[in-house]
Image (tube, rainbow, N blue to C red; front, side, top):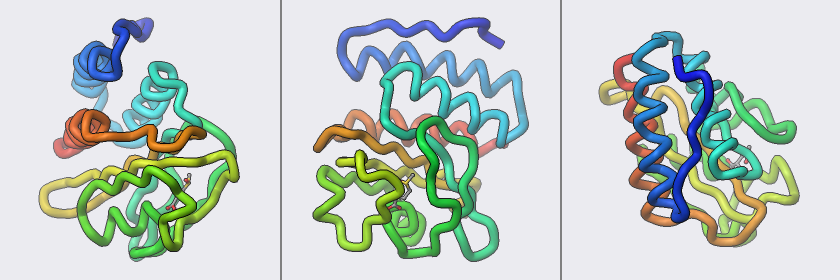
Amino acid sequence: MAEKLIIQGNSKEELYQTLFPQLVSLMEDESDTIANMANISACLWETFRFWWVGFYRVVQDELVLGPFQGPLACTRIRKGRGVCGTAWERRETVIVPDVELFPGHIACSSASRSEIVVPVFNGDEVVAVLDIDSEHLATFDETDKLWLERIAALFARN
Ligand code: SME
């Protein structure tokens, strides 16, 4: 495993380009899903200093809080609820430029202003979601979607 995360690049695209191969090699060396979720949360947080980065795992009929970096978060989310439950139900990434305008948004922290949630698939099944919150409006765009979906896809073999 890499001893230290290399953070290099000026643009978001460059940062993801530097980060991605490091996450690939991190996950090649470790097959435990929880351990990988923990390190991916840490690496995304360290690279981008997002307000909150973490995973919710599908456990029976709910999402249950998994490894994360950031402040205290709500522990259980039902399918179709909030941004996380919506991404799970729709089986697609949801980008929310302003959380106040998203009906049913679950405010774990009042500092969160925008959010992206990416489903994690194992085969055809959604097994988790990757949730990232920003304290700024409209932080996330198609670049984040593309790279975070690539990162989420690394779990497919776990
Ligand atoms: N805002 C999320 C809840 C999880 S927290 O942001 C960590 C939602 O609406 O599903």
